[in-house]
Figure 1 (tube, each protein chain N blue to C red):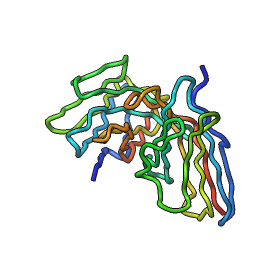
Figure 2: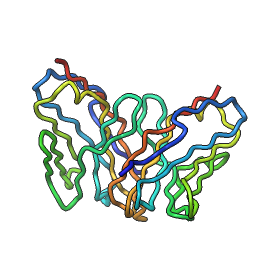
Figure 3: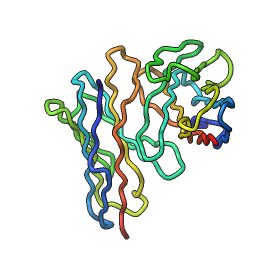
Figure 4: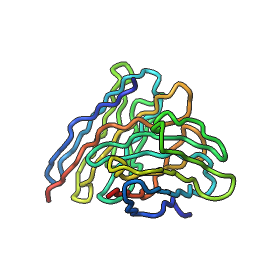
Length: 113
Length: 114
């Protein structure tokens, strides 16, 4: 039973480029959460999605960031026109039901040059 | 707004000693409190969790206690081993909208000296 998968594990982008981060939840899990971890800090909630629906995006920056979880395929976190301040580790977590245990993936470490 | 405070930020113990990490939360509506262990370069791994209808939970060398009145919860690790060295995060689910998002503490770096 594979865990939460994230790819790529490391991503380097130059300022102004786009970053696409992918997350495949655990089998049977239809709830996906994205969190961001800045260096030496805790995790900050960004967005919560169910299949084809954004439920809570209260932690997402208003501009340049978007997320989706299509009916088929992984959840995608998209960052347009990246800036150096976007450099961080982005973690995806999945759960089988809302307010059930969240299982985290290995993360994508984004570096913006 | 919602807030979770975690102390200490660093903790160093001798192998075999106990380690205690404490967290406080602000929203009395919180009802779910997980603890995660994060090793360098990896994602957080759930080690134990507790819900607000329970005061204590134990799993081998790890225990969590919850005081709803004081709004704090603690992680206890007994008989620490070098492989327990990692960053530990507490979290609380404190969303009235019931979306389950977690609010994390700032983390505690635990070092177990052999």
